[in-house]
Length: 271
Image 1 (cartoon, rainbow, N blue to C red):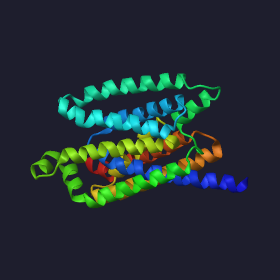
Image 2 (image 1 turned 180 degrees about the horizontal axis):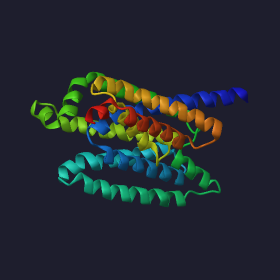
Image 3 (image 1 turned 180 degrees about the vertical axis):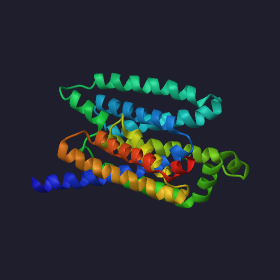
């Protein structure tokens, strides 16, 4: 029994650390490329997908991935071809996804529906399994390789997308890649952080790093580090206080961001 508890504890902390890494790493691109509203919409799509999976008694990870990738396709290639304003599509999809999520939650069968609903809303400290860990490791590897191989192209796009496009870089391809990686990161982290809070883990650590550094290399290093620390501390708080792990992680990351604003050397220069 003790060995089982230790195994669950180790699996959970590894899952929290990996979720902190993937979310805060993808957050570097989401924040810099002004994709915050898109990522916010996608997190609610993953939330709706997880609720849909629970309603049908299938793996919530699979259904959240399907919903997230479907949303990424609409926000990416389809929006580009249809030549529609992204904000219009985002507003439409967000309202649809959040409505569907609560409908699916209401239709979850069984007496434990309320407990299940809370787990996908706020996350659960012991909801991560070995398959989730493997998927998070896979995504962490993909993200790292993606950054290492296309570092120069990403730097050019982050500096000026139009200038990068004029120099021959296929900016749309990288834009779509970021969308799908965000969908993947959100879906895999929803068990830990929860559908309503996972997006904060993407934004807060990166926003904190941006308060201190101009150099992209430093931001790409410190953003995941802040995300990992936030998840680790949030995990311990949840473990000892029985607070929802998602809420604990987000509060810690928000505190880091608030402190960063207060101590930011960038803001001192502005004054």
